[in-house]
Length: 445
Ligand code: AVJ
Ligand code: FE
Image (cartoon, rainbow, N blue to C red):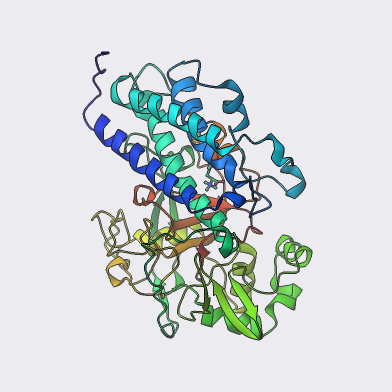
């Protein structure tokens, strides 16, 4: 038996392997909720079909850790190309067609099993932390694989969200929806001027994606921000006031998206016989007015403009979430304690949102609520690298491909964000006309 290569303190093989196993079990459970007839379905036209992701997760692990990192030959070259990548195409024509090219599920699963064995063997005993190899230094490739899978579990959930209910099987342990009644009365809080630290310096935390590096300090002027995320109740006023028909409220690209798809309300809302419903993951619910509204960036911006306000910048989000009166910045809105289920709605404890303001233990120093959890928070900041950005050696395309001025930063976490991804520096991003994600917002002035 090969002798395990010693790893430096802080990087613990059994922790990484346990995380890998937990990831794989959670992904497996998600794929098991899809009925066989829907395996090749493409519930979001801009994304790959469901079956792609069952191959993508293990193939990405093989490509990143075994091939790029450890220099192995890999397991199946054709699979490792077929399942390499498939995210965020420009439009539906760029996706490509042909369900025929996807292998049967049993074959994809056999590949995944083989990949899992080799990945676990590598995490258990190979030189996965090699200071002389930029792909492996500090365990970079291993963390890349682990966070990539955790992140995709959110992708999978919001893709599954669009599947018709008769194409998926509800797991037995789904908690009953917590709908509440009405949202709290809107309040706006003043955040004094101060410094925000975006990102993080290399080596400060065990792993960061390239777009988080290096730390980036911004002096933020005083501003006002909503205490609570905008609720379905709040947003209903905008819909009823004809906000979707008023071009002047929309950014040009937002209006184009709205017109092209004839968008008249949030994607998560459905009108049935004159009554509004929420399309939940497992059932349709009478629209819970106390829940945050999930909308695209284009819709969020139009609502804010209608209110005479605007979306917060990424730096303002940081001030509202992590700033304090003393000038010290917290790790999390509530302080330095680790993220747990008392702080917010994240880490898969639910499939849908909860009423806004349900987690007072997650409040920021200023009393701003739900900044982490219950849905990502849109910002007005165009996604770009910080000064000193370098593409990460383990996955150079991860962020750089999206520095095109067409993506906006989202912060925080949704119900489908793993707790490992809950950290101050984490940044997420999407196009303004991507309405599928669990994303909410609040307004600023
Ligand atoms: C960071 C969530 C925008 O899903 O497009 C997954 C994550 N990148 N595989 C995406 C990602 C490559 C990415 N987001
Ligand atoms: Fe991916």
